[in-house]
Structures are given as structure tokens and as C-alpha cells.
Length: 219
Image 1 (cartoon, rainbow, N blue to C red):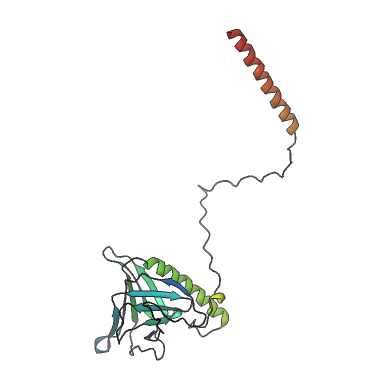
Image 2: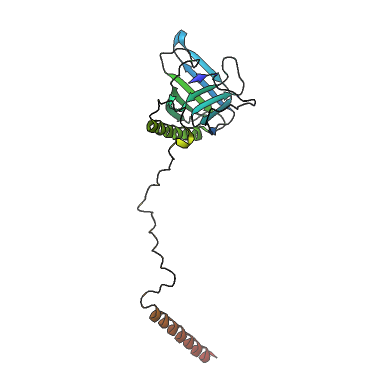
């Protein structure tokens, strides 16, 4: 995790990506940010009332709409964000929180307590963000484990991530429809087909004769 280390682009809410970095999610522009830690005189807090949070295949970024000398950007490797959870209060916007593990020389004050990150999604998007983050985190962790990396995930390319597969839907025996029977190959006729067809023709002819006789009597 680091502050003011993102190379920003010329337009608001843009940044210069790292090598092999791809954006996977971008929030609406009124997402608020708060990073806090420490206690008493050693406490600190960095906040922004509006900005965008971005998930890439390597990190999570926050770019405030209005920059200040103290806070221009935030970034953290995917695996440095732990114990994440999304909350939906009765009043107010949904928000997402997690504990953050700082990186060396990341411009974060020394802290002996947990550092908490809180993102408030005023224009919705909290659950989409959480779902995307958890999927990417799982895939990055698998890729790091398979590659024997140090664990930051910064060197994992998108192509190296294991493919995500949705879990199979639950099977409900009470509502599951019976599988359709196998279709017969073209030109196949079951045993006795010709006899059944002949009987059907004879029954149809007899029915027409009966209808004709009834019509004659009525006339």
C-alpha cells in the first residue's frame, strides 16, 4: 500500500498503467475514500469525498477527483488488502472495508495498529466492486502460489491468472425436468412401424365411411 505513488494521466481519474496491467473495474465518480490507522497522537487519516476506485490485474487504486498535496492517489497490491467485507446499512450508501498491509517506502506513517480502508459507493457499485475484487484476489493468489512468487502479485500477468469458472447451479430433485430421450437417427423406423402405419390408415378410412353414411341418413 502506498500514497501518491501512482503515475497520473493528463485527464481526471486516469493513470499510466504498469507493464502488463489491465483495468478490470472502475467505480462511479462519487466514491468516497478514507484510510485511517494508529491511536492518539500517532493516529492518521487520509480522506477524499469523491473519486474513482479501480481494480486491475495487479492492484487496487483510488484517484480522488480533487487532489491535494497530501493526497493525490492510493494504490495497493491485490494481496495486501485483507479481511474485506461489504455492508449495506438501512440508511446511507453501501460501503466496503478492509485491512491494509503497507509496503516499504509507501508514504504511510508508522503504525502499530491495523490500517483500515473504507470506500463508500454513493452511486452504487459496492457489490460489483466486492465481487470483482474477490475473484481477482483468488486468481492472483493461485497464480502466485503456482509461480512461487513473493506474494505481492505485481508480477503476475493477466494471461497467467487461472480461468474463473462459475460454480454449477444447485440440483433440485423436485423441480429438475427429466432428460429428453435420445433422438433416433434419420431414416430410423422402430420395429412394427409399417404395421402401425397401415392400421392408422385403415382406421382413418373407416371413420370417413361412417361419417359419409351418417351424412346420407341426415340428408
